[in-house]
Length: 147
Image 1 (spheres, rainbow, N blue to C red):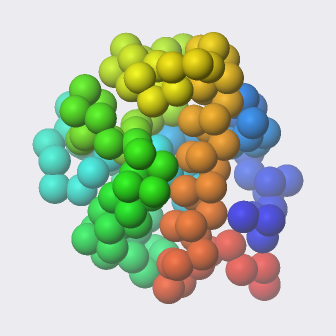
Image 2 (cartoon, one colour; image 1 turned 45 degrees about the vertical axis):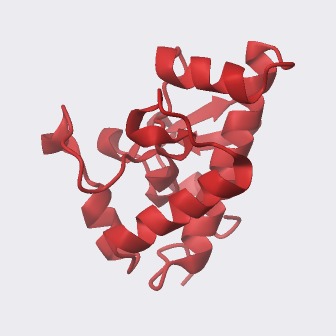
Image 3 (tube, one colour; image 1 turned 30 degrees about the horizontal axis):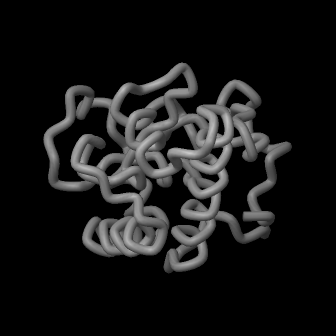
C-alpha cells in the first residue's frame, strides 16, 4: 500500500476515515484501485451498474472476478464478516458510506457488540485497508509499482 503515491491522487478522491487516512473514495466515484476493497460482488445486478468500474479495474490489475470473490470470501471467513443482512452477505463487500448504512452498521453491531459505533467503524475501516493491501499484493499487474 505504501507504493501508491498519495500526493499524485487528486484530494477530491480521498477521504479520511476512522483508522484510514487518505482512504480512496469508491471506484464508481473516481477512486484509485485501493477502492476495490469497497466494491460489490461480481455477478450481481447493481442499481448503479452503469457507473461500475470494478471489472475494468480488476482487469487492469490482472485479477479475475472469481479471484476477487475468493479474496473477499477468505477475508470474510478469517474475520467472521459474513452476515445475511449485508449486501452480498458479507461486510467485505460493503461500500464506504461514512454517513451510515443500516445494513453495514447493524452487522458491525452484531459483530462487535461491546464496541461503540465509532470504535466498530474504526475496526471496519482498519480491516478494509487490510483487505485493500491483500488485493494489491496478489494482483498480477499492480499499478502501484513506482516507475
